[in-house]
Length: 212
Image (cartoon, rainbow, N blue to C red; front, top):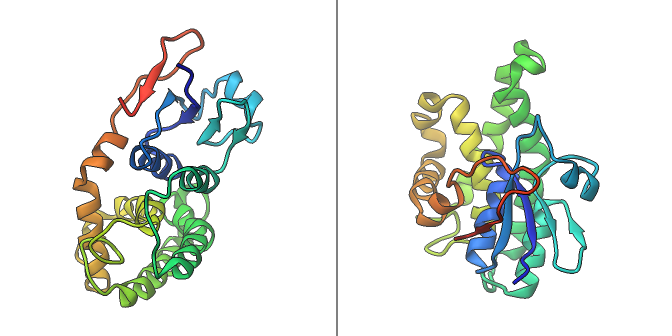
């Protein structure tokens, strides 16, 4: 049986949310784990921009943006179901994909950008988290008792933000509810499956079906 092909990288937040969505939608694919410093030619031929994830559908069509892959999966099987906060969810995802990610990169990888502006970018991320914190009504997920598209799409980025300085993040009183949800997310069985380690894919390797 032919499956869609997914080029992925374990730690990439865009790839993480894609793998989680594949699990939730019960969609199997052929997983090809890549190293970003050693990208396979077949991936670059499919998507010359050279970023993951890249999904090649059974008909050969290529989707090379994670949010487009997630929306395609939802269009086939709306595994999140209807949500009264849909407009808020889409607005927050755009905010995290653009503004939050911009500042996150310059905070977490400040030595690549401008080390002197590290705290400036951390504070910009924190402002966005503080705004989200005020809108959280209940846990364990950001919008209540059921996992939503918002959780899947932005928690991988918040995870990266925490990794940059775990002690500071864990002790910050301004986003206690977000911290609680993030811990729940990190212990979630689906996240554990999505973060399983796979060897680097090479041309000619036996296919790896995900989720197994």
